[in-house]
Structure formats: C-alpha cells, structure tokens
Amino acid sequence: MNNDTNQPDEGEVILIDKPLTWTSFDVANKLKRACKFKKIGHAGTLDPLATGLLILCTGKKTKQIDTFQAQEKEYTGTLVLGKTTPSIDLETGFDAEFPTAHITPEILENARLQFIGRIEQIPPIYSALRVDGERLYKKARRGEEVEIKKRNVEISLFETDATRFPEIDFRIICSKGTYIRSIVRDFGLAAGSGAYMSALCRTRIGAFELKNAWNLTDFIQQKRLELKLEVNE
Image 1 (cartoon, one colour):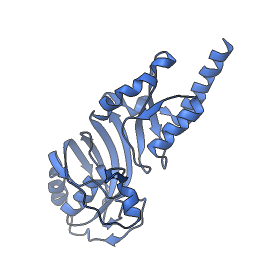
Image 2 (cartoon, rainbow, N blue to C red):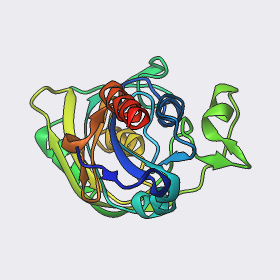
Image 3 (cartoon, rainbow, N blue to C red):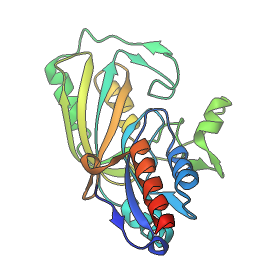
Image 4 (cartoon, rainbow, N blue to C red):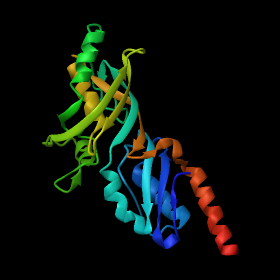
C-alpha cells in the first residue's frame, strides 16, 4: 500500500489499478458510494479500454489533483499495424486495412525516432477532450466533423519491440496531455501503413507506481473493514 492515510477530514491519496472497461469516473463514483467519501476526484483520465494506475484524492487532498495531473506519465502497451479503427483502439470496429509487407526494421526505427522529444499531435476524435463545451467522443458518435487543434507534448522515451510483428509492444514516458492513441495512429502513418492500439497500461505517474496500487475490490473491502472497526471502537 502506498497511500496517504491521514485523518478522514484531511483526505487520502489512493492508488487504484483501474479495471478494464471501467471509466475513471466509474472508479471514483464506486469509491464514493462504497467507502462513504464525501468528496473525491481523480488525477488524470484513463480510457475505458486502458488499465493501470489511477490516482484518486479525497477530502482536502483533492487540492493536490492539479499537481499530480502535471506529472510525467509512463505507459506500456501494444499497437497493431495493418488496420485502423475510428477510435484508434478496439472501442470501435475496423474501418480500413493497410499493407505491412514493406515494413522493415529500418522503417520501424525511423518511425520510432519521429516521436521522441517535443512533438505536435492532434488528439483523437474519440476522447474526453472538450470542444465548444462538449466531450469530443459525443460529437464523434454523432458523426460530426470537428476541427481539433494540435498540441505540443514531450516524449522522453519511446521503446518498441517488433518481435510479434505486426504487433508492436511499446513503452512510453511522456508529459501531461499526451494521447498515446495519437502516437499509435501517427506511428502507423510514419511506417506507411495504419495502426490501432490493442492494449494500454499506465504504469507510473510521477513517483507513484502501479506496483503499489490497490485492486479496486480489495481496497473497498479494506476500507469497509476500517470503517466497521471505527464504529465499534
């Protein structure tokens, strides 16, 4: 356990390994109801089809959310060359196929190098980013055309392993605001193909690591036990 366990009115910093298919809001809402937290928020959204480290803050600790959100992030995942989806992951079905026979180790390396350092990227249309006061994914589901502004992000590490080609395993260390699906999309284009993301796990936020995070069910059981003990004291 690597959580701040101050007095209840001071709040806590809770590390959770977000379950697959859950939204970050789902996790916060579940904890609020199950553990009787009066105030709770999360420090950085994870897509439903991603797993890994989610930092949640309760009580007065919610004042630290902006600080946690600004910290460096680390991810591991898998991209697949040769096909694309509108969401760049498996939330939506395949919409196109692309060649992969031409892709050599040199092409993969040249593509990888394009995504190290300060880069520009366009966030995915299927994202929680707000445009004109509305989440982009809602506009995407209605089929709306939306102009999405480029953003500057910093990629300090991008490692790839093509042992299972056309599946490419990767590890990325990046700045706040980086969309890993955008890197996957653009990596596919740089390789002269297309790509989608089949798996993603956030392994670190600043100094907080996934290995110290709670399983959601285990945390709830432990918190309920603590609450029960407090009542009986």
